[in-house]
Length: 390
Image (tube, rainbow, N blue to C red; front, side):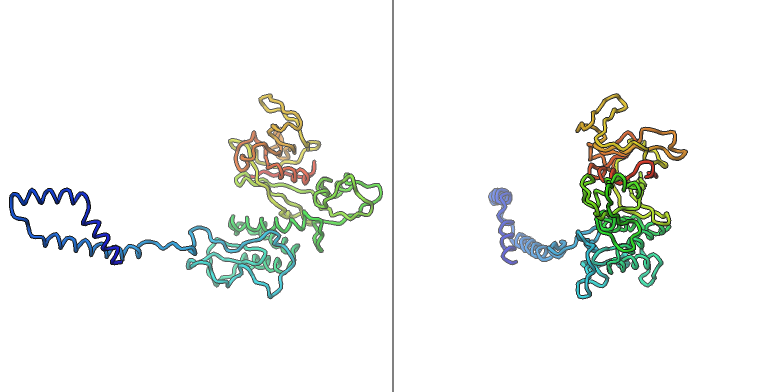
């Protein structure tokens, strides 16, 4: 420390500006009068030295310390949900990742958010509540978490679905999104895989009989044959006698939230209540031109590689890679007072994926290429409904 101060003093004492001015000035003054005493200069130098030493000691204590373990400001990660999280239940000896009671990564506010986490799901509430108060919502969330922990997928989905549909606005938008995400992951196994779980009334098993083909079987369950192909990994042209297939008790229905640019897919349970399946991000009509109301997938409207003529008269042939509506078209028919006089609307793909999440179409609903391909296989003509809400 003292070495650096000495170097600093040396630099201060030999500044060129000081050499040039003080030297010439000294010679000029000596020719006219006797030199002034040197003690004021010595005192000044000592004062500067003391100041430099003081600042050298004080400055590090005023500057914020940056280290590799510092936690940046922003949302704090409570738990990490791994790919393929829904596996067989863990044993008691396995570590409960993100469970309550773990040492926090950083100091938390005095009134932290409610955290309920397991190996498979983390449900976080951003609503503040007293630590001692157990609300009905908290208990319902905990029940769903317990079901997930025990591997009861069907029951966990039912509990989460009840939270999503019967919360009467108690859920924050963040909580609702977490529940949708977890239900989507559950449904990757419960709906979109060949596996069938006990007590799951949304699906059924079917044994292929002699002379049958999927085009006959699938309509009995209110789903397109393409969806049976998707979830079973089969080719409808190569079915073997006695093959067991998983089928879904359809039809699927859709709700489009304009404000969220989100399309939600549902199935009805045996009581007619909607069960959330999954979501897709969408693009909508420019200048709020996508009309709200109830629609039905129009009979004979579903087309793969459709030709299309724009309102300006520009024609795009089938399979044209520049076709603005992409490779799939699902036509809609108005089904209430708000929509029954409207025509020409539909759900389709896009060659402009950057417009998903924006208002950019002529009024239709557009999806990413992979998403519209899957949705095309899910919706059935004349039965699947599409409700568009603000």
